[in-house]
Image (cartoon, rainbow, N blue to C red; front, side):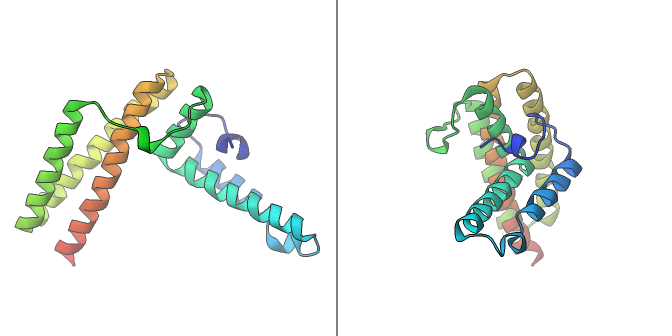
Length: 171
């Protein structure tokens, strides 16, 4: 399933969020259960399946990591497999370890200011990687784009950890 085709959008990393929302509402309205009340059980089931596909496609297009992976898959035919993914970028692996250690220290010290600074640093790294990802995708550098999505996936997990620490500090 190509989520871009489903929403009648060009296959591009930068998408028009308003158009995406408009298309989503039109598609979901057309598949509303009331429209199929007099239909057969099979037609109702197909409408529900289609609705689920639309919801999945929306989530893919809204998430920059999933959107990038969809673009890579459309162009290469390769299915993204998290099990086979391993980041061989040693500098980034070292950066991950440093970030985790910093977050642990911040949590132990219960430093709200340091947590805010740390969060800003991670979010800036995320924005830089998203900009790099857009460029690599437009240049059709699929392997490099995959490596960047792996880094973004780590940062996404790290930001979840930051939120957990933040809840503990700010109550």
